[in-house]
Length: 441
Image (cartoon, rainbow, N blue to C red; front, top):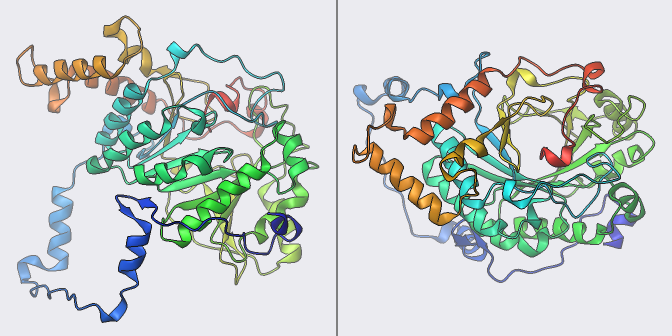
């Protein structure tokens, strides 16, 4: 690891050789072996029969359009934005104390009974996936400190059969390397690794904790697994603050010289207790200028989709990319497709909005507000099933149970209240909002 610190443009070193790492239901080594069979494989794919006029591509597309299911009106706001991405905070706890995320004095933690249980998170995840959510990201706090994070990810990963396409994680990487294999087996497809400095001493200042070597070990492990075929979509997130870590912009970019990493620079944003100031905020355009002083051919590349939050650039010849999250100077509200559930069960339709609605309280109302464990959840689901079958009452419209319908109505009303865009910089710095640690990013 010292080699990386001495020269950021060198490839990150490998530290493990995996014998058999499970990956999405099959081992990486077996997948690699199958891929390496090459042209000597005798397997052939039969040719498809020619298309008849009735099955021409044009007619097929018309059939698909005709049969396409309309997107959920519960997840569609008044500006016709379809919300397909759900971020779930699974804990308020964290093993770091980053200056931009948490006040120096810390934050009061909610009693454990107020935090969503695993059955509750899985129930809400399934409900959202049935309505059209295709991507779920688990956040915190630090999600890897949750004791049952692996069983939780296994349960959410099983929702792929119901339409979930991506299961991602945002983490500080401190303990990720110890749990990564199990997470990949559970269906992990993407990791956003928060790392604001490549200097171990600066890391200690910015996070108020030790742990730099552990983070780099997690980064190495992801890269190693990807070399063996894991296919984990890796992004490094760095919050850039003037006079703090802005001198490291170019070294961060150079991590992508030989490694397929997207380093994303985030404009410093105001949240309760992080002592935000305009003077500390380095804008997107300033960061681009810094990079172009050394790499003048840095150019913008096309984003992967219309809902991307990051403006993506690349230095010609580099394997990796550079992204900029410009919430403060050039918002991307017009294409926002994100919803958030806090660890205590509140739905937030905007990161910067201070309006929240409790899904937890509605979910627990039949239990008198008590947390729902697996036994209670199965009993609740059976009651819903009985009602749908007209055994214990009338079924809800469109096959919804009474509880599902109530939750979706509340979710739909919250989504409909989502504004066209969040407040401007001058208003944001004076608005009341949770500390970032209690939102989940």
